[in-house]
Image 1 (cartoon, rainbow, N blue to C red):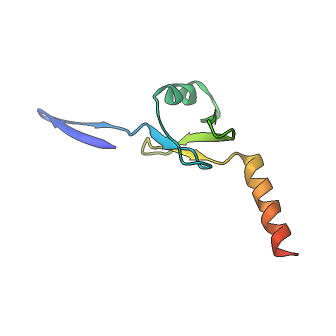
Image 2: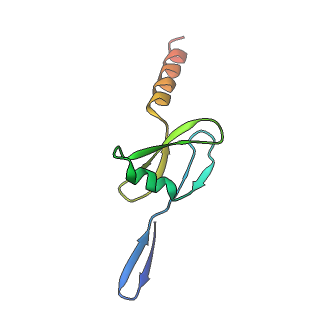
Image 3: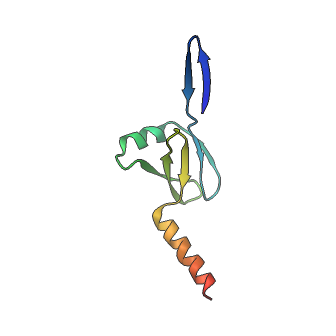
Length: 86
């Protein structure tokens, strides 16, 4: 977030960039903010060029975060458990 003083007021603008948690590709597009605002669940799904999906959420400071989907987290957990118990 960047803040600038204009006359007697301070204006803060949130950063609208985020990255894919799989390949690290950076996205800079405000259309995803609009999609999140229209969606009542508070997130939106993005399909990256690497072929994998991920969700985008906004934290309380207005910063966007790319996170794994719930299904991906469960698959990762199962994979880790299988490796641990082998």
